[in-house]
Length: 586
Image (cartoon, rainbow, N blue to C red; front, top):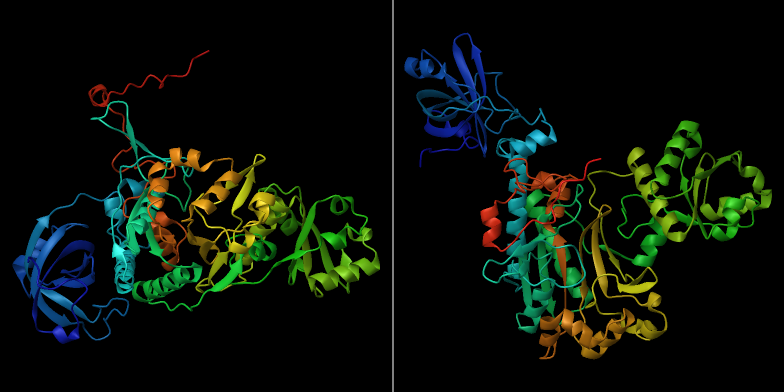
Protein backbone atom coordinates (compact mmCIF):
# COMPACT_ATOMS: atom_id res chain seq x y z
CA UNK A 1 0.00 0.00 0.00
CA UNK A 2 1.18 3.53 -0.76
CA UNK A 3 -0.26 4.77 2.55
CA UNK A 4 -0.32 3.56 6.15
CA UNK A 5 -3.29 5.70 7.30
CA UNK A 6 -6.25 7.48 5.70
CA UNK A 7 -6.99 11.20 5.91
CA UNK A 8 -9.88 10.65 8.30
CA UNK A 9 -8.15 8.32 10.72
CA UNK A 10 -5.51 10.03 12.86
CA UNK A 11 -6.32 11.17 16.43
CA UNK A 12 -4.51 12.52 19.51
CA UNK A 13 -3.57 8.98 20.53
CA UNK A 14 -1.41 8.83 17.39
CA UNK A 15 0.80 11.77 18.46
CA UNK A 16 4.56 11.22 17.90
CA UNK A 17 3.80 8.34 15.50
CA UNK A 18 4.88 8.38 11.84
CA UNK A 19 2.19 8.18 9.20
CA UNK A 20 2.10 8.00 5.41
CA UNK A 21 -0.95 9.59 3.77
CA UNK A 22 -2.20 9.86 0.18
CA UNK A 23 -4.79 12.26 -1.17
CA UNK A 24 -5.71 15.44 -2.99
CA UNK A 25 -4.76 19.01 -2.07
CA UNK A 26 -8.05 20.39 -0.81
CA UNK A 27 -6.75 23.81 0.25
CA UNK A 28 -3.39 25.52 0.71
CA UNK A 29 -2.46 28.33 3.13
CA UNK A 30 0.93 30.01 3.54
CA UNK A 31 1.37 31.55 7.01
CA UNK A 32 4.68 33.32 7.40
CA UNK A 33 6.65 30.77 5.45
CA UNK A 34 4.91 27.75 6.98
CA UNK A 35 2.63 26.00 4.46
CA UNK A 36 -0.57 24.36 5.72
CA UNK A 37 -2.44 21.98 3.42
CA UNK A 38 -5.73 20.16 4.00
CA UNK A 39 -5.15 16.76 2.41
CA UNK A 40 -8.38 15.05 1.36
CA UNK A 41 -9.38 11.49 0.55
CA UNK A 42 -12.67 9.63 0.74
CA UNK A 43 -12.35 9.24 4.50
CA UNK A 44 -11.84 12.89 5.49
CA UNK A 45 -9.35 15.73 5.79
CA UNK A 46 -6.00 15.92 7.60
CA UNK A 47 -4.02 19.12 8.03
CA UNK A 48 -0.42 18.60 6.96
CA UNK A 49 2.35 21.10 7.71
CA UNK A 50 5.44 21.99 5.71
CA UNK A 51 7.76 23.83 8.10
CA UNK A 52 11.24 24.74 6.83
CA UNK A 53 12.68 24.30 10.33
CA UNK A 54 11.26 20.76 10.46
CA UNK A 55 12.26 19.71 6.92
CA UNK A 56 13.57 22.29 4.45
CA UNK A 57 13.54 20.08 1.33
CA UNK A 58 9.92 19.01 1.79
CA UNK A 59 8.94 22.66 2.36
CA UNK A 60 10.66 23.72 -0.86
CA UNK A 61 8.76 21.05 -2.82
CA UNK A 62 5.46 22.17 -1.25
CA UNK A 63 5.88 25.63 -2.76
CA UNK A 64 4.86 24.10 -6.14
CA UNK A 65 1.57 22.55 -4.94
CA UNK A 66 -1.83 23.54 -6.34
CA UNK A 67 -5.42 22.49 -5.60
CA UNK A 68 -6.24 18.89 -6.53
CA UNK A 69 -2.62 17.81 -6.97
CA UNK A 70 -2.31 14.18 -5.84
CA UNK A 71 0.23 13.63 -3.05
CA UNK A 72 1.94 10.98 -1.02
CA UNK A 73 3.39 12.37 2.20
CA UNK A 74 5.16 10.99 5.22
CA UNK A 75 5.59 12.74 8.53
CA UNK A 76 5.12 12.86 12.27
CA UNK A 77 1.76 13.33 14.00
CA UNK A 78 1.65 16.33 16.37
CA UNK A 79 -1.10 17.71 18.60
CA UNK A 80 -2.30 21.08 17.32
CA UNK A 81 -1.20 24.15 19.26
CA UNK A 82 -3.45 25.21 22.13
CA UNK A 83 -6.57 26.98 20.84
CA UNK A 84 -5.93 25.86 17.23
CA UNK A 85 -7.96 22.62 17.23
CA UNK A 86 -10.73 22.40 14.60
CA UNK A 87 -13.90 20.93 16.18
CA UNK A 88 -15.50 20.55 12.73
CA UNK A 89 -12.95 17.89 11.68
CA UNK A 90 -12.65 14.37 13.08
CA UNK A 91 -8.88 14.87 12.75
CA UNK A 92 -9.09 18.43 14.06
CA UNK A 93 -6.93 17.88 17.16
CA UNK A 94 -3.81 16.82 15.23
CA UNK A 95 -1.64 17.82 12.29
CA UNK A 96 1.16 15.99 10.49
CA UNK A 97 4.59 17.62 10.09
CA UNK A 98 5.87 16.41 6.71
CA UNK A 99 9.39 15.11 6.14
CA UNK A 100 8.80 13.50 2.73
CA UNK A 101 6.64 14.70 -0.18
CA UNK A 102 5.98 12.83 -3.39
CA UNK A 103 3.78 14.45 -6.05
CA UNK A 104 1.95 11.51 -7.63
CA UNK A 105 0.17 13.68 -10.18
CA UNK A 106 -0.28 17.35 -10.98
CA UNK A 107 -3.78 18.71 -11.64
CA UNK A 108 -4.97 21.44 -13.94
CA UNK A 109 -7.17 24.09 -12.33
CA UNK A 110 -10.54 22.30 -11.97
CA UNK A 111 -13.55 23.82 -13.80
CA UNK A 112 -15.60 23.61 -10.62
CA UNK A 113 -14.83 24.01 -6.92
CA UNK A 114 -14.33 20.80 -4.94
CA UNK A 115 -16.20 22.42 -2.09
CA UNK A 116 -19.55 21.62 -0.48
CA UNK A 117 -20.22 25.32 0.10
CA UNK A 118 -19.75 26.30 -3.55
CA UNK A 119 -22.34 24.56 -5.70
CA UNK A 120 -21.73 24.65 -9.46
CA UNK A 121 -24.52 24.68 -12.05
CA UNK A 122 -26.28 21.41 -12.81
CA UNK A 123 -24.75 21.35 -16.31
CA UNK A 124 -21.21 21.73 -14.95
CA UNK A 125 -21.77 19.19 -12.18
CA UNK A 126 -22.93 16.55 -14.67
CA UNK A 127 -20.31 17.35 -17.31
CA UNK A 128 -17.52 17.03 -14.74
CA UNK A 129 -19.27 14.47 -12.56
CA UNK A 130 -15.99 12.79 -11.60
CA UNK A 131 -14.94 16.08 -9.99
CA UNK A 132 -18.36 16.71 -8.45
CA UNK A 133 -18.14 13.28 -6.83
CA UNK A 134 -14.91 14.29 -5.07
CA UNK A 135 -16.89 16.65 -2.86
CA UNK A 136 -17.31 15.24 0.67
CA UNK A 137 -21.08 15.73 0.45
CA UNK A 138 -21.29 13.51 -2.63
CA UNK A 139 -18.89 10.94 -1.18
CA UNK A 140 -21.14 10.68 1.88
CA UNK A 141 -24.22 10.17 -0.28
CA UNK A 142 -22.57 7.34 -2.18
CA UNK A 143 -21.43 5.83 1.11
CA UNK A 144 -24.99 6.00 2.45
CA UNK A 145 -26.21 4.24 -0.70
CA UNK A 146 -23.58 1.55 -0.22
CA UNK A 147 -24.59 1.04 3.42
CA UNK A 148 -28.26 0.84 2.46
CA UNK A 149 -27.48 -1.83 -0.15
CA UNK A 150 -25.35 -3.75 2.34
CA UNK A 151 -28.11 -3.59 4.99
CA UNK A 152 -30.66 -4.80 2.42
CA UNK A 153 -28.63 -7.86 1.55
CA UNK A 154 -27.92 -8.67 5.19
CA UNK A 155 -31.60 -8.42 6.15
CA UNK A 156 -33.08 -10.32 3.20
CA UNK A 157 -30.43 -13.04 3.45
CA UNK A 158 -31.40 -13.46 7.12
CA UNK A 159 -35.02 -13.96 5.99
CA UNK A 160 -34.14 -16.89 3.66
CA UNK A 161 -34.24 -14.89 0.42
CA UNK A 162 -31.99 -15.83 -2.48
CA UNK A 163 -30.37 -13.13 -4.61
CA UNK A 164 -30.97 -14.13 -8.25
CA UNK A 165 -30.28 -12.12 -11.41
CA UNK A 166 -32.81 -11.93 -14.23
CA UNK A 167 -31.98 -11.16 -17.91
CA UNK A 168 -31.21 -7.71 -19.29
CA UNK A 169 -31.99 -8.67 -22.90
CA UNK A 170 -35.62 -9.79 -22.96
CA UNK A 171 -38.75 -10.13 -25.04
CA UNK A 172 -41.02 -7.10 -24.85
CA UNK A 173 -44.53 -7.65 -23.50
CA UNK A 174 -47.57 -5.43 -24.13
CA UNK A 175 -48.48 -2.70 -21.67
CA UNK A 176 -46.37 -0.91 -19.12
CA UNK A 177 -43.75 1.72 -19.84
CA UNK A 178 -42.06 2.39 -23.18
CA UNK A 179 -38.97 0.20 -23.48
CA UNK A 180 -35.55 0.62 -25.07
CA UNK A 181 -34.97 -1.64 -28.09
CA UNK A 182 -31.67 -3.37 -28.82
CA UNK A 183 -31.11 -4.63 -32.39
CA UNK A 184 -29.68 -8.13 -32.74
CA UNK A 185 -26.64 -8.47 -35.01
CA UNK A 186 -27.01 -12.25 -35.22
CA UNK A 187 -30.78 -12.38 -35.80
CA UNK A 188 -31.37 -9.96 -38.65
CA UNK A 189 -34.41 -7.71 -38.19
CA UNK A 190 -35.04 -8.81 -34.61
CA UNK A 191 -34.73 -6.81 -31.42
CA UNK A 192 -34.34 -7.39 -27.73
CA UNK A 193 -35.98 -5.13 -25.15
CA UNK A 194 -34.22 -3.80 -22.08
CA UNK A 195 -36.42 -4.68 -19.07
CA UNK A 196 -38.61 -2.02 -17.48
CA UNK A 197 -38.81 -4.40 -14.50
CA UNK A 198 -38.21 -8.11 -13.83
CA UNK A 199 -41.96 -8.69 -13.22
CA UNK A 200 -42.52 -11.76 -15.38
CA UNK A 201 -39.18 -13.35 -14.53
CA UNK A 202 -39.60 -13.04 -10.78
CA UNK A 203 -43.01 -14.71 -11.07
CA UNK A 204 -41.38 -17.49 -13.08
CA UNK A 205 -38.91 -17.94 -10.22
CA UNK A 206 -41.87 -18.65 -7.94
CA UNK A 207 -43.09 -21.29 -10.40
CA UNK A 208 -39.51 -22.63 -10.26
CA UNK A 209 -39.85 -23.23 -6.52
CA UNK A 210 -37.28 -20.62 -5.46
CA UNK A 211 -39.77 -19.49 -2.77
CA UNK A 212 -38.06 -16.21 -1.81
CA UNK A 213 -36.17 -14.14 -4.40
CA UNK A 214 -34.62 -10.68 -4.45
CA UNK A 215 -32.23 -8.64 -6.55
CA UNK A 216 -31.03 -5.09 -7.04
CA UNK A 217 -32.69 -4.89 -10.42
CA UNK A 218 -31.55 -2.43 -13.06
CA UNK A 219 -34.70 -1.13 -14.76
CA UNK A 220 -34.77 0.85 -18.00
CA UNK A 221 -37.66 2.95 -19.29
CA UNK A 222 -37.73 5.21 -22.33
CA UNK A 223 -39.89 7.87 -20.67
CA UNK A 224 -39.90 11.64 -20.24
CA UNK A 225 -37.90 12.52 -17.14
CA UNK A 226 -38.37 14.60 -14.01
CA UNK A 227 -36.60 14.93 -10.66
CA UNK A 228 -37.61 11.46 -9.47
CA UNK A 229 -37.21 9.67 -12.82
CA UNK A 230 -34.20 8.42 -14.75
CA UNK A 231 -34.06 6.25 -17.89
CA UNK A 232 -32.11 3.71 -15.83
CA UNK A 233 -32.72 3.20 -12.15
CA UNK A 234 -32.46 0.55 -9.46
CA UNK A 235 -35.20 -1.37 -7.67
CA UNK A 236 -35.01 -3.67 -4.70
CA UNK A 237 -37.17 -6.32 -6.29
CA UNK A 238 -38.54 -9.26 -4.33
CA UNK A 239 -41.12 -12.03 -4.62
CA UNK A 240 -42.40 -14.59 -2.11
CA UNK A 241 -44.40 -17.81 -2.38
CA UNK A 242 -47.27 -18.93 -0.13
CA UNK A 243 -47.92 -15.47 1.29
CA UNK A 244 -50.65 -12.91 1.78
CA UNK A 245 -50.45 -9.12 1.83
CA UNK A 246 -49.44 -8.77 5.49
CA UNK A 247 -46.49 -11.16 4.99
CA UNK A 248 -44.95 -8.97 2.28
CA UNK A 249 -45.63 -5.84 4.33
CA UNK A 250 -43.91 -7.25 7.43
CA UNK A 251 -40.79 -8.09 5.42
CA UNK A 252 -40.64 -4.58 3.91
CA UNK A 253 -41.19 -2.89 7.28
CA UNK A 254 -38.34 -4.92 8.78
CA UNK A 255 -36.12 -4.18 5.79
CA UNK A 256 -36.73 -0.41 5.87
CA UNK A 257 -36.24 -0.29 9.64
CA UNK A 258 -32.88 -2.03 9.23
CA UNK A 259 -31.81 0.11 6.25
CA UNK A 260 -32.56 3.45 7.90
CA UNK A 261 -30.84 2.40 11.12
CA UNK A 262 -27.66 1.04 9.53
CA UNK A 263 -27.28 3.48 6.65
CA UNK A 264 -28.52 6.73 8.21
CA UNK A 265 -28.65 6.12 11.96
CA UNK A 266 -32.38 6.87 11.94
CA UNK A 267 -35.00 4.98 13.95
CA UNK A 268 -38.36 4.36 12.30
CA UNK A 269 -41.50 3.05 13.97
CA UNK A 270 -43.20 -0.15 12.88
CA UNK A 271 -45.80 -1.33 12.06
CA UNK A 272 -46.61 1.36 9.53
CA UNK A 273 -50.03 3.02 9.41
CA UNK A 274 -52.39 1.30 6.97
CA UNK A 275 -54.88 3.37 5.00
CA UNK A 276 -57.18 2.36 2.17
CA UNK A 277 -57.00 4.02 -1.22
CA UNK A 278 -60.55 5.34 -0.78
CA UNK A 279 -59.70 6.89 2.61
CA UNK A 280 -56.44 8.39 1.30
CA UNK A 281 -58.24 10.10 -1.58
CA UNK A 282 -61.13 11.30 0.59
CA UNK A 283 -58.92 12.75 3.33
CA UNK A 284 -55.81 13.85 1.45
CA UNK A 285 -56.72 13.99 -2.25
CA UNK A 286 -53.78 11.69 -3.01
CA UNK A 287 -52.97 7.99 -3.12
CA UNK A 288 -49.57 8.83 -1.63
CA UNK A 289 -50.55 10.93 1.40
CA UNK A 290 -48.13 12.89 3.55
CA UNK A 291 -49.26 12.02 7.08
CA UNK A 292 -46.86 14.35 8.88
CA UNK A 293 -49.65 16.90 9.24
CA UNK A 294 -53.45 17.08 9.22
CA UNK A 295 -55.26 19.65 7.05
CA UNK A 296 -57.63 17.03 5.66
CA UNK A 297 -60.10 17.63 2.84
CA UNK A 298 -63.68 18.28 3.96
CA UNK A 299 -66.61 16.93 1.95
CA UNK A 300 -69.26 19.70 1.69
CA UNK A 301 -71.06 18.99 -1.61
CA UNK A 302 -74.40 18.30 0.08
CA UNK A 303 -74.20 21.39 2.30
CA UNK A 304 -73.11 23.99 -0.29
CA UNK A 305 -75.78 22.91 -2.77
CA UNK A 306 -78.25 24.50 -0.36
CA UNK A 307 -76.64 27.88 -1.07
CA UNK A 308 -77.53 30.28 -3.87
CA UNK A 309 -73.98 30.24 -5.25
CA UNK A 310 -74.37 28.76 -8.74
CA UNK A 311 -70.78 27.50 -9.02
CA UNK A 312 -71.36 25.25 -6.01
CA UNK A 313 -74.95 24.30 -6.89
CA UNK A 314 -73.96 23.04 -10.35
CA UNK A 315 -70.69 21.29 -9.48
CA UNK A 316 -70.51 17.46 -9.30
CA UNK A 317 -68.25 17.68 -6.24
CA UNK A 318 -67.23 20.39 -3.76
CA UNK A 319 -64.57 19.96 -1.10
CA UNK A 320 -62.58 22.40 0.99
CA UNK A 321 -59.59 22.82 3.26
CA UNK A 322 -60.01 24.52 6.61
CA UNK A 323 -56.77 26.44 7.19
CA UNK A 324 -56.15 27.46 10.79
CA UNK A 325 -55.49 31.19 11.07
CA UNK A 326 -55.98 31.59 7.33
CA UNK A 327 -58.35 34.57 7.71
CA UNK A 328 -55.21 36.72 7.72
CA UNK A 329 -54.43 35.73 4.12
CA UNK A 330 -54.08 38.82 1.95
CA UNK A 331 -55.72 39.24 -1.44
CA UNK A 332 -52.30 38.58 -2.99
CA UNK A 333 -51.96 35.33 -1.00
CA UNK A 334 -55.35 34.14 -2.22
CA UNK A 335 -54.58 35.08 -5.82
CA UNK A 336 -51.36 33.06 -5.64
CA UNK A 337 -53.22 30.05 -4.27
CA UNK A 338 -55.86 30.34 -7.01
CA UNK A 339 -53.13 30.41 -9.66
CA UNK A 340 -51.64 27.34 -8.02
CA UNK A 341 -54.83 25.20 -8.15
CA UNK A 342 -55.36 26.14 -11.81
CA UNK A 343 -52.19 24.15 -12.59
CA UNK A 344 -54.31 21.12 -11.70
CA UNK A 345 -57.19 22.15 -14.03
CA UNK A 346 -59.35 23.70 -11.30
CA UNK A 347 -61.37 26.62 -12.66
CA UNK A 348 -60.83 28.68 -9.52
CA UNK A 349 -60.52 28.78 -5.74
CA UNK A 350 -63.40 30.13 -3.66
CA UNK A 351 -62.93 31.12 -0.03
CA UNK A 352 -64.89 31.97 3.10
CA UNK A 353 -63.24 33.48 6.18
CA UNK A 354 -64.61 32.89 9.67
CA UNK A 355 -64.89 36.27 11.35
CA UNK A 356 -67.12 37.23 14.28
CA UNK A 357 -68.64 33.75 14.19
CA UNK A 358 -69.87 34.13 10.60
CA UNK A 359 -68.66 33.51 7.06
CA UNK A 360 -67.12 36.49 5.31
CA UNK A 361 -66.15 36.96 1.64
CA UNK A 362 -67.67 38.17 -1.61
CA UNK A 363 -69.72 34.94 -1.84
CA UNK A 364 -70.91 34.89 1.80
CA UNK A 365 -74.15 36.66 0.77
CA UNK A 366 -75.23 33.47 -1.00
CA UNK A 367 -75.22 31.54 2.29
CA UNK A 368 -78.08 32.02 4.74
CA UNK A 369 -77.25 32.32 8.44
CA UNK A 370 -78.43 28.80 9.21
CA UNK A 371 -76.36 27.35 6.35
CA UNK A 372 -73.30 29.30 7.47
CA UNK A 373 -73.48 27.73 10.92
CA UNK A 374 -74.04 24.29 9.40
CA UNK A 375 -70.95 24.71 7.24
CA UNK A 376 -68.83 25.98 10.14
CA UNK A 377 -69.87 22.95 12.19
CA UNK A 378 -69.27 20.50 9.33
CA UNK A 379 -65.73 21.77 8.73
CA UNK A 380 -64.88 22.28 12.44
CA UNK A 381 -63.82 25.82 11.53
CA UNK A 382 -62.87 28.27 14.28
CA UNK A 383 -62.62 32.03 14.53
CA UNK A 384 -59.82 33.30 12.27
CA UNK A 385 -59.80 30.22 10.00
CA UNK A 386 -60.42 30.21 6.25
CA UNK A 387 -62.24 27.67 4.07
CA UNK A 388 -60.69 27.15 0.60
CA UNK A 389 -63.06 25.48 -1.90
CA UNK A 390 -62.63 23.72 -5.23
CA UNK A 391 -65.77 22.72 -7.13
CA UNK A 392 -65.46 20.44 -10.17
CA UNK A 393 -65.31 16.80 -11.23
CA UNK A 394 -64.14 14.63 -8.36
CA UNK A 395 -60.75 13.79 -9.90
CA UNK A 396 -59.98 17.50 -10.42
CA UNK A 397 -61.10 18.37 -6.88
CA UNK A 398 -58.81 15.65 -5.48
CA UNK A 399 -55.82 16.70 -7.62
CA UNK A 400 -56.17 20.44 -6.93
CA UNK A 401 -56.89 20.31 -3.19
CA UNK A 402 -54.44 17.45 -2.64
CA UNK A 403 -51.66 19.53 -4.19
CA UNK A 404 -52.82 22.69 -2.38
CA UNK A 405 -52.70 20.82 0.93
CA UNK A 406 -49.04 19.92 0.33
CA UNK A 407 -48.23 23.48 -0.76
CA UNK A 408 -49.79 24.96 2.38
CA UNK A 409 -48.02 22.39 4.53
CA UNK A 410 -44.68 23.44 3.04
CA UNK A 411 -45.37 27.21 3.05
CA UNK A 412 -46.55 27.35 6.64
CA UNK A 413 -44.21 24.67 8.01
CA UNK A 414 -47.02 22.47 9.27
CA UNK A 415 -44.68 19.50 9.71
CA UNK A 416 -41.22 18.61 10.93
CA UNK A 417 -39.07 18.06 7.80
CA UNK A 418 -36.90 15.57 9.71
CA UNK A 419 -39.85 13.35 10.67
CA UNK A 420 -40.22 10.04 8.83
CA UNK A 421 -43.87 9.07 8.41
CA UNK A 422 -44.42 5.79 6.57
CA UNK A 423 -47.75 4.29 5.61
CA UNK A 424 -49.24 1.55 3.50
CA UNK A 425 -51.96 2.44 1.01
CA UNK A 426 -54.05 -0.65 0.25
CA UNK A 427 -57.17 -1.82 -1.60
CA UNK A 428 -56.59 0.10 -4.82
CA UNK A 429 -59.20 -0.32 -7.55
CA UNK A 430 -58.22 -3.25 -9.74
CA UNK A 431 -59.42 -1.45 -12.90
CA UNK A 432 -59.58 2.07 -14.24
CA UNK A 433 -61.76 3.41 -17.04
CA UNK A 434 -59.67 4.79 -19.91
CA UNK A 435 -61.60 6.24 -22.86
CA UNK A 436 -64.67 4.21 -21.89
CA UNK A 437 -62.67 0.98 -21.76
CA UNK A 438 -61.65 -0.94 -18.64
CA UNK A 439 -57.91 -1.39 -18.15
CA UNK A 440 -55.89 -3.01 -15.38
CA UNK A 441 -54.68 -0.33 -12.96
CA UNK A 442 -51.46 -2.23 -12.14
CA UNK A 443 -51.11 -5.33 -14.30
CA UNK A 444 -53.40 -8.14 -15.34
CA UNK A 445 -51.81 -10.64 -12.96
CA UNK A 446 -53.05 -8.83 -9.81
CA UNK A 447 -55.36 -10.85 -7.56
CA UNK A 448 -58.77 -9.29 -6.78
CA UNK A 449 -60.02 -9.27 -3.20
CA UNK A 450 -62.15 -12.38 -2.63
CA UNK A 451 -65.22 -10.45 -1.45
CA UNK A 452 -65.17 -8.37 -4.64
CA UNK A 453 -65.08 -11.30 -7.08
CA UNK A 454 -68.86 -11.15 -7.77
CA UNK A 455 -68.45 -7.60 -9.12
CA UNK A 456 -66.04 -8.66 -11.89
CA UNK A 457 -68.88 -9.23 -14.33
CA UNK A 458 -71.40 -6.80 -12.78
CA UNK A 459 -69.44 -3.61 -12.01
CA UNK A 460 -65.61 -3.67 -12.35
CA UNK A 461 -65.36 -0.24 -10.68
CA UNK A 462 -66.18 -1.93 -7.35
CA UNK A 463 -63.41 -4.52 -7.61
CA UNK A 464 -60.43 -3.86 -5.37
CA UNK A 465 -57.10 -5.53 -5.99
CA UNK A 466 -54.68 -6.97 -3.47
CA UNK A 467 -52.44 -4.03 -4.24
CA UNK A 468 -50.27 -2.16 -1.78
CA UNK A 469 -48.00 0.89 -1.99
CA UNK A 470 -45.54 1.94 0.68
CA UNK A 471 -45.34 5.73 1.07
CA UNK A 472 -42.87 7.95 2.93
CA UNK A 473 -43.69 11.61 3.59
CA UNK A 474 -45.99 11.83 0.59
CA UNK A 475 -43.66 9.98 -1.79
CA UNK A 476 -44.41 6.50 -3.10
CA UNK A 477 -41.25 4.44 -2.54
CA UNK A 478 -42.57 1.05 -3.58
CA UNK A 479 -45.54 -0.91 -4.79
CA UNK A 480 -46.60 -4.48 -5.28
CA UNK A 481 -49.42 -6.99 -5.17
CA UNK A 482 -50.50 -10.53 -4.57
CA UNK A 483 -50.54 -12.23 -7.98
CA UNK A 484 -53.11 -14.40 -9.71
CA UNK A 485 -51.94 -18.01 -9.91
CA UNK A 486 -55.26 -19.64 -10.83
CA UNK A 487 -56.46 -20.02 -14.44
CA UNK A 488 -60.16 -19.54 -13.61
CA UNK A 489 -59.57 -16.24 -11.80
CA UNK A 490 -57.14 -15.11 -14.50
CA UNK A 491 -59.74 -15.79 -17.21
CA UNK A 492 -62.37 -13.69 -15.40
CA UNK A 493 -59.97 -10.78 -14.79
CA UNK A 494 -58.87 -10.77 -18.44
CA UNK A 495 -62.43 -10.82 -19.75
CA UNK A 496 -63.13 -7.43 -18.13
CA UNK A 497 -60.47 -5.77 -20.32
CA UNK A 498 -61.73 -7.57 -23.41
CA UNK A 499 -59.12 -10.33 -23.59
CA UNK A 500 -59.65 -14.06 -23.67
CA UNK A 501 -57.19 -16.33 -21.87
CA UNK A 502 -56.05 -17.60 -25.27
CA UNK A 503 -55.41 -14.05 -26.53
CA UNK A 504 -53.45 -13.29 -23.37
CA UNK A 505 -51.39 -16.44 -23.92
CA UNK A 506 -50.26 -15.02 -27.25
CA UNK A 507 -49.08 -11.84 -25.52
CA UNK A 508 -47.66 -13.34 -22.31
CA UNK A 509 -47.04 -16.82 -23.66
CA UNK A 510 -44.14 -18.05 -21.55
CA UNK A 511 -45.59 -16.86 -18.22
CA UNK A 512 -49.11 -18.19 -18.67
CA UNK A 513 -47.71 -21.45 -20.06
CA UNK A 514 -45.57 -21.79 -16.93
CA UNK A 515 -48.64 -21.25 -14.73
CA UNK A 516 -50.15 -24.44 -16.17
CA UNK A 517 -47.50 -26.52 -14.39
CA UNK A 518 -48.40 -25.70 -10.82
CA UNK A 519 -47.87 -22.08 -9.86
CA UNK A 520 -47.90 -21.42 -6.09
CA UNK A 521 -49.78 -18.49 -4.54
CA UNK A 522 -47.26 -15.65 -4.57
CA UNK A 523 -46.80 -11.92 -4.23
CA UNK A 524 -44.08 -9.32 -4.16
CA UNK A 525 -43.05 -5.72 -4.29
CA UNK A 526 -40.42 -3.42 -5.77
CA UNK A 527 -38.84 -0.58 -3.78
CA UNK A 528 -37.35 2.35 -5.66
CA UNK A 529 -33.84 2.10 -4.22
CA UNK A 530 -32.63 5.46 -5.57
CA UNK A 531 -35.70 7.16 -4.16
CA UNK A 532 -35.39 5.52 -0.75
CA UNK A 533 -31.75 6.58 -0.43
CA UNK A 534 -32.57 10.13 -1.56
CA UNK A 535 -35.28 10.48 1.10
CA UNK A 536 -32.95 8.89 3.65
CA UNK A 537 -30.49 11.69 2.89
CA UNK A 538 -33.21 14.36 3.07
CA UNK A 539 -33.23 14.95 -0.71
CA UNK A 540 -35.92 15.07 -3.40
CA UNK A 541 -33.79 14.55 -6.51
CA UNK A 542 -32.63 10.95 -7.04
CA UNK A 543 -29.78 12.18 -9.26
CA UNK A 544 -28.03 13.31 -6.07
CA UNK A 545 -27.56 9.69 -5.00
CA UNK A 546 -26.74 8.20 -8.42
CA UNK A 547 -23.08 8.23 -9.40
CA UNK A 548 -23.54 9.04 -13.10
CA UNK A 549 -27.12 10.19 -13.80
CA UNK A 550 -28.64 11.62 -16.97
CA UNK A 551 -30.09 15.11 -17.45
CA UNK A 552 -33.84 15.69 -17.76
CA UNK A 553 -33.31 15.37 -21.52
CA UNK A 554 -31.92 11.82 -20.95
CA UNK A 555 -28.42 12.94 -21.99
CA UNK A 556 -25.07 12.50 -20.30
CA UNK A 557 -22.97 15.66 -20.87
CA UNK A 558 -19.92 13.88 -19.46
CA UNK A 559 -19.62 11.03 -21.98
CA UNK A 560 -21.75 12.58 -24.73
CA UNK A 561 -24.41 9.87 -24.84
CA UNK A 562 -26.62 9.25 -26.68
CA UNK A 563 -24.34 9.33 -29.71
CA UNK A 564 -24.78 9.09 -33.46
CA UNK A 565 -23.79 5.80 -35.07
CA UNK A 566 -21.64 5.47 -38.13
CA UNK A 567 -22.84 3.92 -41.36
CA UNK A 568 -20.55 0.95 -40.71
CA UNK A 569 -22.07 0.34 -37.29
CA UNK A 570 -25.60 0.55 -38.67
CA UNK A 571 -24.76 -1.77 -41.56
CA UNK A 572 -23.44 -4.39 -39.15
CA UNK A 573 -26.87 -4.38 -37.47
CA UNK A 574 -28.74 -4.30 -40.79
CA UNK A 575 -30.21 -0.88 -39.92
CA UNK A 576 -30.81 2.29 -41.92
CA UNK A 577 -31.93 5.75 -40.72
CA UNK A 578 -34.47 6.50 -43.44
CA UNK A 579 -36.85 8.12 -40.95
CA UNK A 580 -34.39 10.78 -39.79
CA UNK A 581 -34.91 13.71 -42.15
CA UNK A 582 -34.27 17.42 -42.00
CA UNK A 583 -37.39 19.62 -41.72
CA UNK A 584 -38.66 21.05 -45.01
CA UNK A 585 -37.83 24.75 -45.41
CA UNK A 586 -40.21 27.43 -46.66
